[in-house]
Amino acid sequence: MSLFFEITQSLDGFVAGPAPSLEDPLGKGGEALHEWAFALRAWREPHGRDDGEEGPEGDLVDASRARAGAVIMGRKMFSGGSGPWDEDPNASGWWGDEPPFAMPVFVLTHHEREPLALGETTMTFVTGGIEEALARATEAAGGKDVQVAGGAEAGQQYLAAGLLDELLIHTAPVFLGAGTPLFLGPSPDTRLEIAESLGGRLATHVRYRVVR
Amino acid sequence: MSLFFEITQSLDGFVAGPAPSLEDPLGKGGEALHEWAFALRAWREPHGRDDGEEGPEGDLVDASRARAGAVIMGRKMFSGGSGPWDEDPNASGWWGDEPPFAMPVFVLTHHEREPLALGETTMTFVTGGIEEALARATEAAGGKDVQVAGGAEAGQQYLAAGLLDELLIHTAPVFLGAGTPLFLGPSPDTRLEIAESLGGRLATHVRYRVVR
Image (cartoon, rainbow over all chains, first blue to last red; front, side):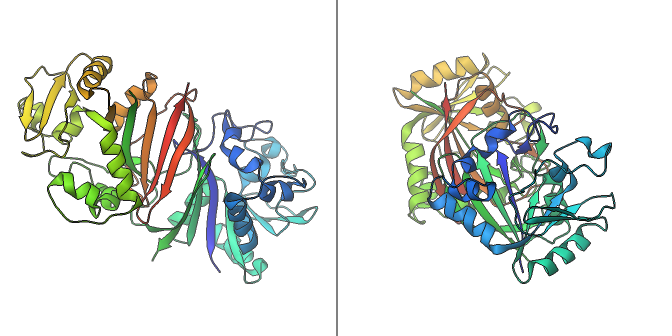
């Protein structure tokens, strides 16, 4: 089992723009980060559409999806920023009735809550911290890999704890100027090597392996 | 004439580590950023060595060098961080007797100073700001392009002023954790497109074109 963190950043290192909200969970300008994905069949299919482009970037998205048997995400990524969660701990997040995961999802949170079944995705809320979430996701993944899907804070926590095996970073040719930084002082002791890279028209994709 | 900014950053967005000094101008850990270049014939040759590897990354370095007819750099890049410059405005910097540029170099500074001839490189000190430096470098380049070679602050100034045509960013699989950030709140209004990308073993290279 490998634990990989996959996320898209701007050229200036932000994964969301300023002022994220339930209506605008990626913050001001943040949607532009993901333009590289929106056109791909590999992205559109899990989002319920049956068209889109094929190619090396689609293959990369497919491969990342195929290797994962479970997903871990932070609470803000579930609920869409500082949304109604804080007032209503039973809010259903912003993933709608058919989240694109179609595999077990574990949400890092401080609020105890019953699992939430949405289409083919069951969201399980974990209050015991990143190691408990990893243990449960690993079990649910049934031998496949586990993906930390974001946000930045969840990835930073797994990185700082030395639990990540890989980072798959998509960098879009976009400046956000402010917002949520992907990295905030990760340990310089973390050694990486480039495992794979792919240049696209709307993003550059690099898979880094953590060297132990 | 195109104005391009070329620099190497860490995965977490720093171009130098903490505490740069004359002895350690790239700061703690900063040397590791440039490992991708050290092995290349294209890098070694201008540094007075006649060996090194050929390949696509070398071709990219050669191409970047061949297109440039003049270089602009910040004062700290000339003098090697907060070195003896502040005490001795006639200090010769840390480029030695044979700087690797072998073309006219314009140094952004607040100190008036006579040009400094070092081997095939003449360093000219410009106190009139980035536009004056650009005008003089453009003239000296004789129809070729002008390279902003760093540091981060010089690049940021040209970017913020809307004067850059391209950015050539090399990203090394290194975390520095702290240091000199490549970008500090550039305008989100700057639109970019990816003009070229190349994945190497020790760095990913992306050339971004500014869209006007």
